[in-house]
Amino acid sequence: MRYMFHSFRMLMKSAMQYRSSLLMQVIAQVVLTGGELLAVTVLLSRFHVVGHWQAMEIMFFFGVMQSSFALTELFGRGVAAFQGFVGRGEFDSLLLRPRPLLLQVVCSQLDPRRVGSCAVGVAAIVIAASRLEIAWTVGKVLLLAEVVLCSMLLTLGLFMIEATMCFFSVKSIEMVNVLTYGGRSTCQYPVDIFPKPLELLFTYLAPFALCMHWPVAWVLGQPMTALSPGWYFVTPLAGLVFFLLMTRVWYWGVRRYRSTGT
Amino acid sequence: MAFIEAKGLSKVYVRYNAPRTGGISRLWKRERQEIPALTDANFTIDRGELVGLIGPNGAGKSTTVKLLTGILTPTGGTCTVDGRTPWENRREHVRRLGAVFGQRTQLWWDVPIRDSFLLLRDIYGLEEKRWQRRLDGLVDALELEGFLNAPLRQLSLGQRMRAELCGSLLHEPQLLFLDEPTIGLDAVSKLKLRAFLREENERGGTTILLTTHDMEDMLALCSRVMVLGHGRLLYDGALDALLQRYDTVHTLRVTYDGGADVSALTAAAQVTRDGDAFILTYEPATLPTSTLLPMVLYAGRVREMTLKEQNVDELIARMYREMKL
Image 1 (cartoon, rainbow over the protein chains, first blue to last red):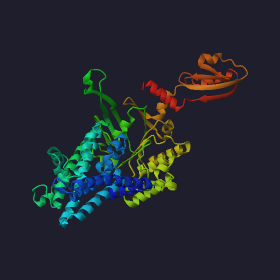
Image 2 (cartoon, rainbow over the protein chains, first blue to last red; image 1 turned 135 degrees about the horizontal axis):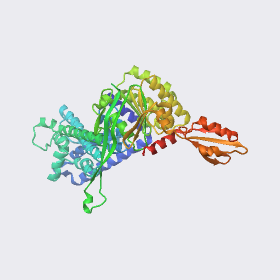
Image 3 (cartoon, each protein chain N blue to C red; image 1 turned 45 degrees about the vertical axis):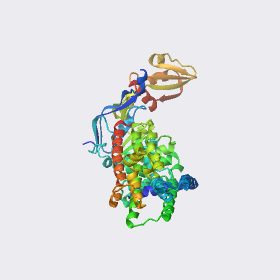
Image 4 (tube, rainbow over the protein chains, first blue to last red; image 1 turned 180 degrees about the vertical axis):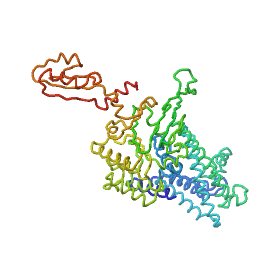
């Protein structure tokens, strides 16, 4: 923990060396994500409802997705940019240090400009929540935290697909991006407005629905499924499971890397 | 038991290439190509030794280092370092290991090097007091105090290398790997670095494995060398003995006042002219210098005379040639 904390603090310090550049990039991120938010708002001002969802509810989903994705990009930069890391041979130096490899990868990089997107995401949640009449309970707040955390793990897990593939020098990154960035763009809307195949894809394969939409829908008082409330605390764990699974696969890739050295 | 013990250590890389011939099937067919990087290496290294690892590029030096550090798993053979197998139980192994790769930094680029050292303290879980004492000692020995607060990117190459060394030694490793530590350094920095390494090896008792192309490093530091070529260990022993084996040709350059009768010399050695000077090339093994010298003096009035041994680089080049590397 101390190692992780110190790593991040140092990476922040590194980033601060280029303060104005960082500031510009954060602003760029705000504009970029804000633009997306604007697009959603414009869309909703025309149609008011998408499926059975009202404008502000959609905004809430958007906020949860953007903020959890941005947080993953912020802290999971090392995993997302892992390919270049291996390419430059820097991975070898991690193998020479007595700490768990994945932890080292995560601690190796930070992407502070994502603070911008994250802020927009949080703003969307706050705006939406203030307009909606949600009966907040402690449980719901905790659930929302769990949702964000598990969605982060899920996204990190998706990034890890790419991080594993680079051990095999396979360049099918585009396919993976469908799940990661495609997942972000798609799943900022509740998954039940999409055609069945897409809904199934993001429910069971890259389970954004389990992690995010089902519990959030329940928080909003519009459950997507007929589960009893307790279950909404369980389904986000799909993100954790997905992440653990990908960790195993990644370590398997590491073993291969060490035996082939490519 | 020896500190490092390798038995039949081998590594074969497998590469898949697209075949050059054969119609459409070329698109999916892959030819399996096995590249032996290290074949059947046997050696032992004792605690406290300073061993040089030399060989031309692609000889298997870095594969050997990667196997000993546990970065790679071998395809055959066994190896233990301090009783442990490097590629099993990675974390226990690397805790006692330091490494400096001349071309690649292990520290953080944009932060003061003091912060890098702090983070290394956390990474290795070092006790605060012990770390501080060690850091003070290293900062002193490597003359780092002036730029502890400067980020790595602002340091000169020599300063950076010293910082790297400091970082790799903070956790008091038993075994230190150095890859081209003096590359690109000026003469003064090189000498200082060598002195430091000798000190660290002798007083600190750190076992050091050094790969370098700089023969001066070898001469200054290593009493023992291992020569690798085509993935095989070709020589393992004293550096002096190795050099003597290839130091078979000497050159004597002599200039005479007035005329000289070099006919006797021409019969004994190979004589060429360089302006006024005669250059005599001979093999001390068959024609001892003590026999040649009187002949040289007899031939005329010597104005100037210099005896040259081959320089180490030439020797090594010759060795590679003769070993067909």
